[in-house]
Amino acid sequence: MKSANYEVKNKQCARIPSKLTNNLSYFLGLLITDGHLQYSIHNKRKTRKSCVQLFTSYEEEIETILELNYKIFNYISFASGRKNGFNKKTNFQILINSKKLTEKLKSRFEIPTGNKSLIIRIPKIILNSKKEYRLNFLRGIIDGDGSIKPKYSQISVSSGSQLFLKDLKNLLTSLNIKSGSVRKEKSCYVLSISNKKGIEKIYHECYKNAIYCYPRKLMSLEKAIFKKVNKCSIL
Image 1: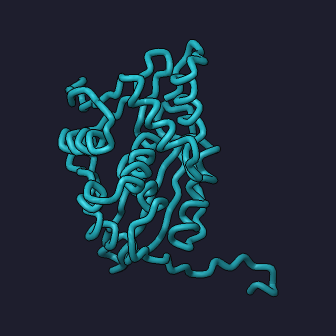
Image 2: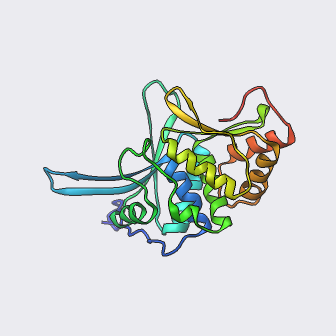
């Protein structure tokens, strides 16, 4: 088929990580906040589809995710985009089609399949890991679901799971980063970091020398620290 100029898609087997690493910790932060584990059964065809999904609405972040997937799982991913509802931005989806990886992420890292927004928790293996893994995981959380407001020197994380944000507060405390109380706002819960030392620590220890991060979040942190504030915040 290749010799006849047909495009051939070879089946890939994702590598299953045997231990926690900096890159995997960061990936888990992205997956928990901006990703999804799918495990579904199609009764008519008697087939099962299992995959790991990551989402972004920013084209510049696609390459970061693709490189990360290849580095950790030795898997060549592709991005597909579509517009949802009234949102003018295209939402890009990056997949890793692997039943074994999906099951591993569910069992070892306690990430639920399906809709997880109201029940997600920070994996115990992360909470009990060494400092550098917790820092990389925190960067993934902020990149995936953090709102950085340079004008007010504030970082906020929102979630439908109150327990997730309580876990996050404990994680921040273990890193000597002060945060506020978990509060309810409309349809979600919010945890904020509003002290200068905490934001500087996150910048220097999570972002400054990071191999993988979202550029817009790094730029927002730099604006918050060095006071190069525009009228609009980068979310």
